[in-house]
Image (tube, rainbow, N blue to C red; front, side, top):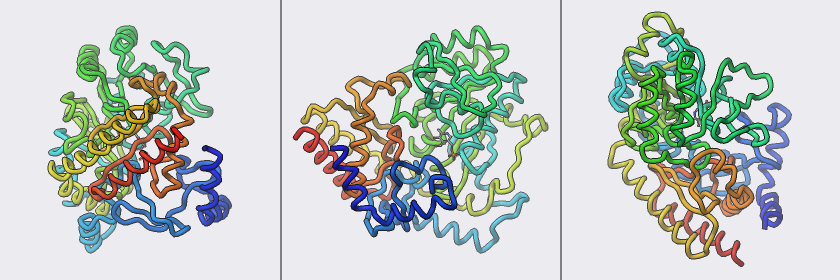
Length: 436
Ligand SMILES: Cc1ncc(COP(=O)(O)O)c(C=O)c1O
């Protein structure tokens, strides 16, 4: 099936192939972020509206990636456009305070129940600055992160993001696996959903550990949910050992619910990182949290800079998202997501597929294993070959999901019953093909 699907891919995406060949002359791999590439070439898109994209071959594609969550409102959402146009009337960049950036900060503080916030332009910046703030706050320097945890490109946070199992060592006490040319300082790596392993590291090294950074729900390994009580236990241990707890909500954020994953799960971190969904598709990120910790910036102990921070266009995107992401709007999208998950679960049972579904907020995924995935080692034991085949199958039938095989679909405010039916029926056709 795989060979037939790749043949179908190259046959139906000729113009994307040509575009990729030309783009390789000016950009490595012909893409603007290495995530976007796959072999032999990725789909090249010319426009997008609502939940749909048009590629250079003229195919209409149902977008279930939605900019990894950044397009939560849908492509070219009218509110986002209206706010952005209104902001443009007043200028594009002031690099000095403005009521629109103050307004943006107030909105984020209120919505995510944090005292103070600073803006940045990417998730990478937000996680980097959050870690630096934690270090400046308690004067310690080591970082604890999860095996399999992805937080962007800040050197220490790339440790063991997706380590080779040959190098990863003992699952209970994983080795920190460091990429070539990366400078990391001291980074300890722990397995997700394992409080004893975490406490062991904290008890031994708490005098040097500044912070523990994790996604409250892992959304770079499909979707991996925290065990009941795990995050509350993490909170307790961080408090006990005077370690700053950072939730990376770059991916969860508004896709987890109107106040993010921390609020939904009921565990409050010390610092939170936001990006993607908060900006309506404009480049926007933020980090914030307790006043006592954020005031290390006030005191000059942590330097936070950025020419484009809090620029009016990004603030306009934030304003629009704040207005759009009501309890009701997100509940509607979540109900569509739940419907998709339930129907796909039924198909998995009907066809006895070695898979299960996982959902959180407006996101969902099919995990190709019978057993639940609780950490990186479980994720590595899932069936990547069927995952790739399933992704390629959908791509060939006009449904685009993220290329990483470790991502998930996103039901945006622009997806409706028609789109859910397409997602489910495509999965059914795939199940039929697998079993025939
Ligand atoms: C959890 C998480 N943190 C941080 C980042 C980095 O964000 P950016 O790509 O905006 O730098 C990502 C990106 O996918 C992410 O998934």
